Amino acid sequence: MKIQHADLTPLGWSEWFEERAACGPDETVARVAAVDRDMLLVMDQTGTFRAKLAGNFLHRHRSPQELPCVGDWVCVQRQPSDDFGLVRTLLERRTALRRRSAGDTVDYQMIAANVDHVIIVQSCHYDFNLNRLERYLVMVQDGGAGPCVLLTKTDLVEPDVLASQVSRIREAGVTAPILTLSNVTRQGIDDLKRMLLPARTYCLVGSSGVGKSTIINELIGRQRLQTKDVSQTGEGRHTTVRRELIVIEGGALVIDNPGMREFGILGAEGAIEDSFSGITRLASGCRYRDCSHTDEPGCAVREALDAGSLSREHYDNYLRLRDESAFYQMSYAEKRKKERDFGRFIKSAMKDLRKK
Image (cartoon, rainbow, N blue to C red; front, side):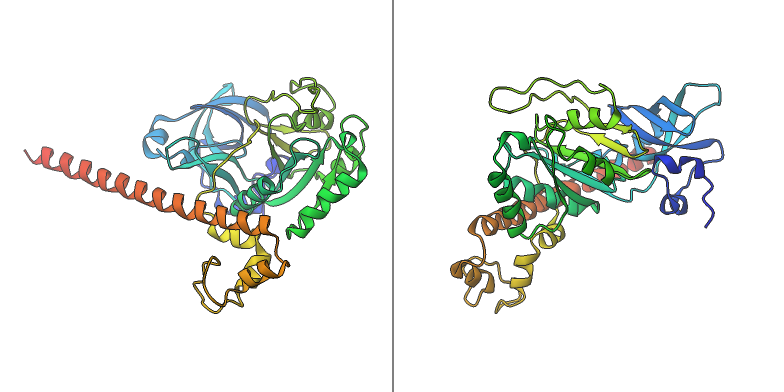
């Protein structure tokens, strides 16, 4: 298939998007680099420019996951001489990185779209947390991107501590690539640069202060993102305030994110089964097909736990994520049903008013 928008290939465009592109005759394709409410910074083959969501688009799309986020491809109406555009259409996403919205509202919050690889950044000094890493891996698996683990600040721990952390990750069944890096000694920087390929999109996620912005400044080759000194505990201070898509030296595209220490899982049962593949394999030997792996007789998962071949921490985190995802998915389904029922009520009421 001939790619009509070949000049967008350096920005991550591919045949997959070409097959699904449906822009109007007076519209062009652009990629979202940053979002500020209904205002966007987008980029195309000519450079970057500002755009706003069209009124009819906002009217037709109310859910947060139906609105453009960083990494999305959109159809923009813009005159050649204008430096401002109007977003008419959001193109289908190939991958999506999302989490449950904070607070009492049960809904999705989009983090990034059309990401090829997600780099999960953890400091091996103060921030290393295997349970949180497994949570990130579920989120990545659920969205369809490929995961990579990056352990930073290796200069602050002894080699045996770092080796133990890598071993714990592997024992948990994580098969994703693991890189180690120090922004002080620059150990691992070249390995990271070699991994980042032109026209591929990478999203960095992790807690505040683990060194994401410092890493991106290193990749860009200049001080673009503000950073702050490390505290006496080795903990960095969070500086990134919004998500932004950046083209780095060498042609790769990188999305930096504000720190995410806590985030909820919603409707990710399949991703949990894939991320905890060792437990999934054990479950095939359970006596009952609907075994919950808690107190049923003949549970192969519990037998492995009692025998010591399955880590208690790994097992507890599996149950926690599974139950959390199921609970919020049920609440989300109820919320959507209420919204649909209310929409039908409004339509019926408006129809009755027109008859009078």
